[in-house]
Image 1 (cartoon, rainbow, N blue to C red):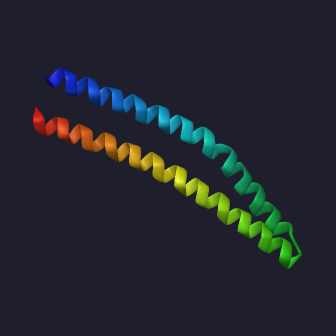
Image 2: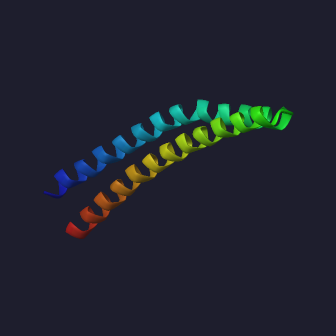
Amino acid sequence: MAAAVGREVKRKEVEVLKAEQAALMKRLPLEQEAVELRLAIAKSRSESRRNALTARMNAVELQIREINTEISREKRELTLLAQGYAAIV
């Protein structure tokens, strides 16, 4: 029984690492775009252009936060599974 639960914890750990890797690959271009948008906002003289860039910046930051939330949720699930395993053993 303990071995099966241990395998399940290990399987979930691998899932979390793969999800984290995939999330980092999604987040990297978004963070690059965020930096470029901040630079464009700083350079922009037009208020309407600055507003449009700020709106896009907010959307990019929201996507980054969603990715970070997903990583946190996966890690929390792993922690709960490990705590459940520790309670059994």
